[in-house]
Length: 165
Image (cartoon, rainbow, N blue to C red; front, side, top):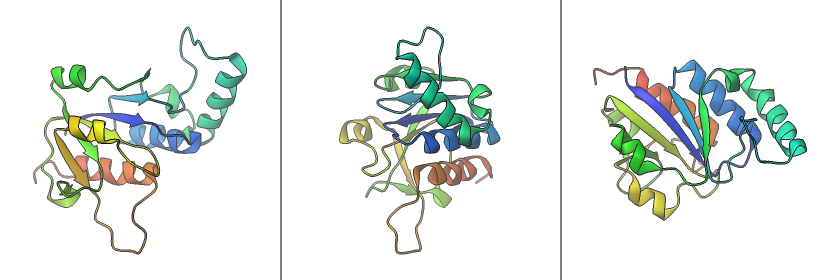
């Protein structure tokens, strides 16, 4: 099974962050990197105002249900994709793009850093350029995309369910 870290960049909703924590815990994700303006739970030596830390931690907990205490995480202003790549991870962006590989056709490498972008606009052009590969979830309905936390679950399932593809 692949070793996976998840990078959640500019995810505004604390409910989405909590759901991503819970989903990552269920799939055995090694670590979550919360970057940009993504909400994140209390950390050691937290420099944010205490009332903000408490509010965000409580809101994330509502959907994470303690997964936020089980999955290692860190906050970075900008994800350090070069360092992650140097650690042997392939940077895989989850994004609808003309170069994306449909998830059912994707053969995952052994070490994956799954990069998630903003709820509405997705990954920024700068982050897209830094991805080694892009994957996309096939859509059958009329909506253009899934909610970011739902998409995370689908992608993690697709990346872990059958490593013999």
